[in-house]
Length: 359
Image (cartoon, rainbow, N blue to C red; front, side, top):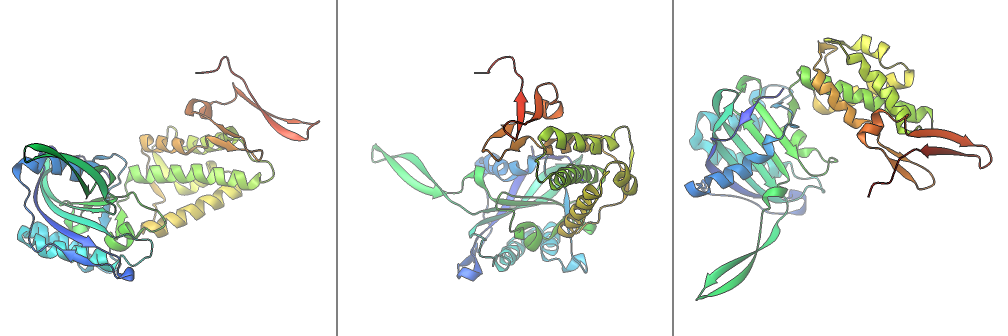
């Protein structure tokens, strides 16, 4: 689910700061003792830095989830308290930071600086709402500044947070509070440890037609490619053969308004290997997201088309040669590529046609 958010009039009402270490390495944990107030002249700069990552169209709407009840979800409860009583920002912000600290025990989790802010003036559609922004930076960047001192200029070296390299973030929008709020997250770190989204925040995607269309189409492309490679282990399929099968799978969505899982498996996933690979990916996605994919939903054509970006574009050969195809070639390779077998050398070959070399 996607809500159009407008941050043009947003402002930071207050900040809770924390240094969050890894308990398994006996790293320290410290929180601010009072709310940090942002000066008026710094509002435009800081608001832009804090909210810019959440302007990405690739972020998917999520919500807090608890296996028993939402009122037992710690971050959800803290957010509810802050929205109801903004003067509890310090107490509840420190509680959120403490939760992050206790969840940061994996050896790969880095220590970092945490900022928790209450944002006002966010437009969600046509409604003005509040939001809570949580940002974690796991690295510091050296930077130089020149300042005037005693009638001369001095060069100073300092270390600080690079706004372009904030590692993790969460924006909790005060919408759909009874269902777990509307939440956006990002994590630029390793995908091996999903502690930020799963362990710390415990959010799940909000399933809607756009998300379901996108995920099913992506899994279909991936499953077809995977099954093709398993079938042709001794003779690696070139991208255009894999993509032809993927295009056939995506053709199911053409001129259709409604999706049926049973019909899709029968018409689009034509081989047992492709069906098995798709079911395995569906099971994995459901386990990771905590959301069961519906067997019937309305198709969103524009989200299906995004799956085409996953089509195979690189062919790696055992001779050390790699052939990389641009999108227009991936979709129509027959005009310039030809595959064959050389009886004399007992080797496969690929012939490439072209008019001239590009500089």
